[in-house]
Length: 228
Image (cartoon, rainbow, N blue to C red):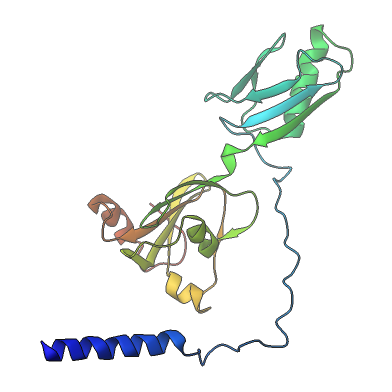
């Protein structure tokens, strides 16, 4: 019992020393530690293609009954008074504007002035799942790296394997997957890859289902995208 108590005291002292001592690897209060760069506010690209469940605003100049907020349904269409059902999915806002102008000018308006905007872009989402603290769907409007995406997902769980992080992506009509090692990315030994909208990030961990492990096993040593 005395030995156990003594060991406990020694461990407490050792941990206290580690907690209060300064790091030898980081400079403290350096003179050149200036203010950060001005943050760049990312915005949705003008080339963004409207996706199902996106919420859009449509303004028809001086026609209030046609102006308002519309949600794209799961079939990719919106329903407007007078105009009826309009295909919106896979169009940019500029392209949808031209479609609506043409439809309205046929029977209702002469030279209609139509403006379309994106209020909520579900098509810009990425999926983060596996051994992260907050799996789910997250928006990605601009540039995002893998490290940033994992951080948005709440970071790694204790059961996560940082060497087994996989990104699923649609490339040239094929489902592709690449494996990444966060430990080497964090130390700068390997680049931090860019994450694009539609990507699915899976962090492997001890609690993941066996079928996921089987799917990912063939790509565990690769850092390039391969078809699955």
